[in-house]
Image 1 (cartoon, helix red, strand yellow):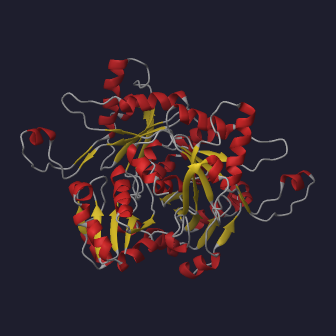
Image 2 (cartoon, chains in turn blue, yellow):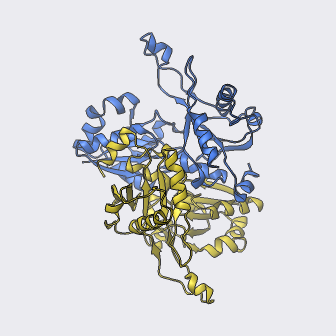
Image 3 (cartoon, helix red, strand yellow):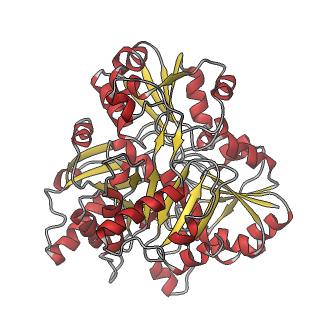
Length: 267
Length: 267
């Protein structure tokens, strides 16, 4: 049978495409992956729309137990695997596709919007984004400098840098895990101010003048929804702003074309 | 009133989101931009679904006459501007958004899938794509080397390169234009073999060993549809393959992660 891997888009139950909804209605079993992003509506809204129950697939199920759940179902009957945003935002979904193919399960991809193209609303040209980077919540002795390195390389080529900000959903804390405690923490979403603080701390160590209080940034919150907040300004000013509800992301523009400059005036 | 800028997705009338369709049904006037990409269904299919007439917006209307058409309508009544793929694939749409804002017209963006995220089906990690480049049909004395330069820079950083291939829809030829003849040509879509030939010709001039017959490439056709063709192989082998109907694009992968390598084995 077929495993339908379906993007839900960025906001709520109504961002699915007509084609995606048709496929969901054909499927007997429906899984929703919601640990790499968040949906801005209750799961009940999805269930009402689909007329079916939706099973939450957590990281453990997708990465370790797919053969006993998602792939087992897909071998027997049409099965949907729903992803917030587009299907291949995360490596874990590519891995699921590979495992499905190894099991001779037919795959049908139904695409949707991703944060990677929704940033176009800023007026920055999508073709001129370099490598994308993620900023994770720093831990005691662990604060990867990768985002700083990516920014430096993109800057060299005059490219824009999109920083995706960490989310922790339904995960135990690393401190608890060390103690063998598997207690689910409250969801956490990194804010733009935290991302600016992160890059500033690395700048203070590295002193390569890559990210300073004067660096032009664009903070974006809730892209793809009806009420996004998008503000352009210097890092030292943006760090003071309240962008409201998650998800947030931070863009550090490269060299600007005059149309891009004009677009930023409206932010 | 509101100008709804709505992505239609990559294939046919059913790729619009439920939210996009709701917005279209609210709008009195509906424009469709179809010169930067193509829809794989007849416009009548859209009109049947919407229950409304769809006005084709050509490049001249969007770039030079928007104030007398799209923006004039949007100032008076809810108006939809439909774009194949996602809304901000092309600079011309950013420019339309800026002009709408200058005229105090409210903008609502409804995102959809773009070729920039649909390439995720190859198994290549989307975060590891560098700058995107376009390959245009070469003309007598004009064969820009930009794609080669972009590829070189992305390779230096081990990033993947996506080459979008030229389309000519409803445009007069440059030869005719020089003679003052405005005769619309038959649509033309660049094939993967033509793109490989283009890069090979630049390599022969530049000899920097950036793109050789041995270079690993991924040719993709009709991404986002139900029958995509995706083949990975050396440039010298892919140039012989028939990828069928448009649109085509060409990916030159950078350094591969082992999950990406495994995914490519299925192509």
